[in-house]
Amino acid sequence: MKMRKDIHPEYGYVIFRDTSADFAILTRSTMKSDQKMVWSDGKEYPLVTVEISSASHPFYTGKQRILDTGGRVAKFEERAKKQQTKK
Figure 1 (cartoon, rainbow, N blue to C red):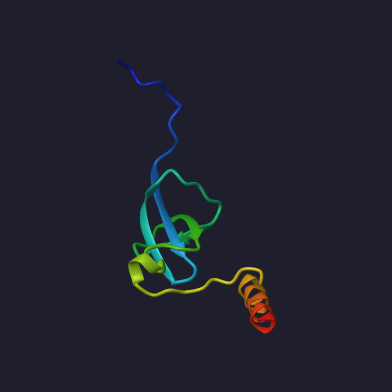
Figure 2: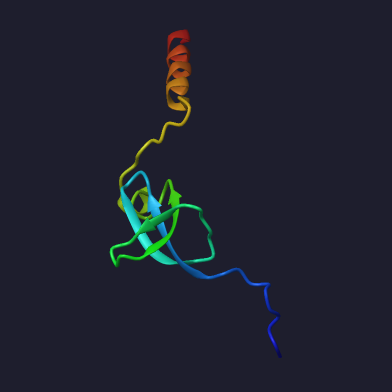
């Protein structure tokens, strides 16, 4: 049985960089990116930026961190204070 041509995505080396933990890993993926980064071997690879990886995820690190996007934590704390003062 012959495989059909031009239906599979290109599978190549990509750097994934975790912005919150200053961690990067070179692996193979079908992800594409316009950004490039030079790896320690001196070659340039596509760069995919991620917010969470095994270097920053609480399951792997054992440390809980709160990522506040848009002031949601502050808004929640204000509502909680209002509820406490009503009681």
